[in-house]
Image (cartoon, rainbow, N blue to C red):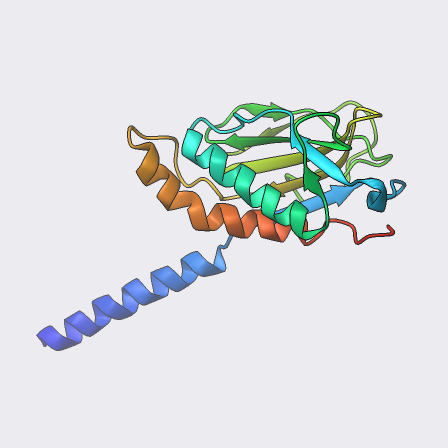
Length: 184
């Protein structure tokens, strides 16, 4: 009887874990289709404190650098073609300004919103990355990964960073899969 009960507990735990995997992180990305992305050669971060945890900041920046350098861009300290801005939301009530790509793609939910002034709440655990054309000062690419940060920051930044390391790297890799190929 005890082994049957143990087996039932193991099956219950396994099914719970598999449901967690099914409820995986969601990513979305949109870009200005009128922009020639092959003209961008360099980038830099316009802000390096998009998350409260400095270790998480470094993780996000390293993942973005890895993805952009893999696409042929070079990180510079001044006069970039693209500026990178990111925001990691660990709580409710954060509002993100619109990106005007003509008809703006709203990465927080599936669908298209009309062009113009709008903002929306970003829920807990969301990472938003903007690539901004340095000459025009317009966002040309926005990616969002939901369910990246699994809780609000605690007193142990290292433990928090360890908890979110895999989701951050996976989410950023998924976002940049949608980065336009050269020539687009």
